[in-house]
Length: 261
Length: 156
Image (cartoon, rainbow over all chains, first blue to last red; front, side, top):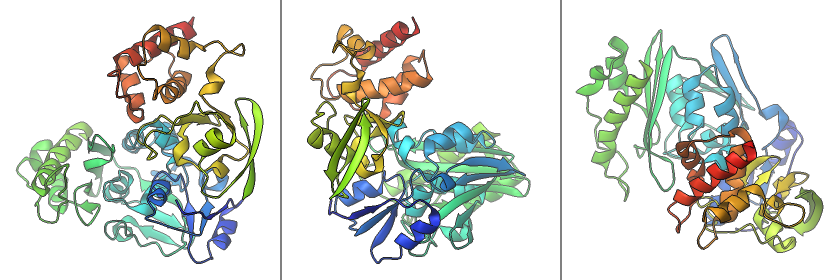
């Protein structure tokens, strides 16, 4: 890892000031950024630490919305997001226990790894990403693999999840990394069903609209049994072919509906 | 270089570190606490697990400066004050929970973390909790046995 200056600001305002330097980067839990820097794939001159900042940590529910502050570690979401059990369950299966004690929701969403779990929850829930500058609907936030609507040095301060009537996340784990080989989050609202898929597409997390339509008329595993996600544009690597991932999307969607219904 | 101070196994420890100095480097190289191991250096294997402010973390994926002011417990802090093995360590010895021993510091620290919140874990719960701790010798069977035995001893 190349050396850099480490800064620990006391507040979000101080963090933004520290980030105004060119090549400064925010550091949240560091569970992705530090390994990336070890491989010299990133070389910021300054890291601005957000982890442990009191104003960025917390889980609360009010008026049918669960709010998770940006630097809340996965373990805290797993323990405290009781108002949204499917989200708590998702958080409790990210990485491993030690990773969950450091990794944060804001870090995960800012990075938008194509195999990360949280993007599926945010997109399927129709969440709102709250930043230091504005509020961004999930449908506009995710813009492709490792790409989001965030501007340089914009910090995620919270994520607001509308709580669905029923929801479930099914992850087919890639056993070495414990990332999702394919993960499907299904969320049923009074207004309709949303289905978000992670791990599969070369474009990162996406909504499977065909399944959403079928499930909105009948929320049963049978409703999606005959649907086939197209293999075109899916990731192919040593862990699975595009066809295999496309097949898993159907399987995981059925399982998620069966578990949620 | 920046000076950093933290409490390690109950003792205040200070050292000069760079921005990029990892917590595990601070512990092993600056403080000589070589019980914490670096296995993969990519946060997969768990040989470097220590406790920071009461929770398990991978010390190869945390900066030394992030632990400034924190309470850190390493495998050296798991022994009894007289130097004899602590309950979990002794259980690993009694139940042959190690062969080469390289992963053992991380296994013991993760086990201690689990037993703080779950005094009587099932085999499945133990195996799930050890997802981030890799052992290439034992097949995990005796590690599970060791942790269950330690849990029984701690329950009294």
